[in-house]
Image 1 (cartoon, rainbow, N blue to C red):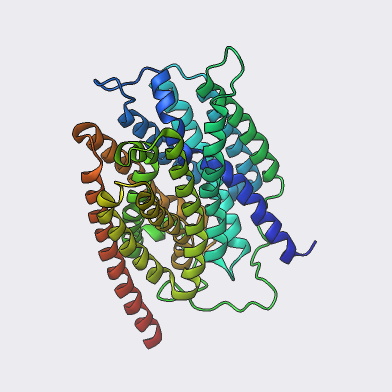
Image 2 (tube, rainbow, N blue to C red):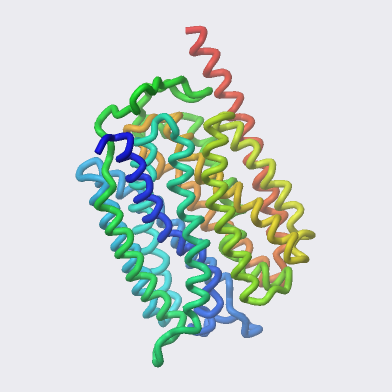
Length: 422
């Protein structure tokens, strides 16, 4: 098999494995029944979503730790071994969450184990895809990370449907975790056998590298120490955190937002979660492709502006099902766009040789958003009975991201002028 065919098979295997890891993004579907089962309730005897926000945040905050581990092990061993091990830890965490009897157990299994396992597999899959597609970095990374959103589209209805089909004697919500955990282990481990890094210096036949707009020269290869000394890294870090903030706030609370703000039934709320997952997946591919055409920073600037407008409009749009669906899908598309674009931005600025570790450090900005975004939404909803103030805060955060992107574009243009003068 030639490399032109092999790289597409490898990308498909990575997409399949990453779809399983969309389980975290579908978590708002089973949050309420799980919290009710564990008797984690507010003073009004409703599920305490601030506690689920904590579990969700733990999961996403552990992703960079898994990615850092995967980067180091992939350098010593291989991406295949890292994805294999990450898949087992991720699936086992999901399976063991099916024995939850306390919040602490959920934090360890769904939060820490699934987060680290997902980060390890995800980091190795994305960096492998980017290395195989130097000619289409934006599209390849977009497709690889789009799988998480697509996974939500599949997992959310499966989880909801399984609630009514648990065997006698099984607690439905816990049984779902066990079944999904086993399925995830089988799928990710099977996919890992197909995943391998390209030969050193691989380039598609007939492809001629071009200079990346305003970023580092094509031959750049920074390690993490060199990268952290660059002011561009810290601007990108802030931009990533600002970009992920709104999306994570909405995704973590999607079902409760739909039920509380638009007064939808739990079944209708599942549809909202599914369509956010679809938008998330489409956004990763769409914006990855667009970034290849108009430039990464220009694409990010557009995403920030769109997100800010959508968040400002959400208090009014969330009053009715259709308008809520349209607005959150726009937000989901941009959220996916951030995740689909930043791996390529990292490769453009700091090179691909140390991409797994470098991107893990940049991705830690995502964890900052994961810790703050869902918690802000949950606490405001508990205190005020509505999410309106949380939506406004998210809009302001997007404006901050817009400003940082403008500064980064200016620095990129100055860098390009210096390179031309030299």
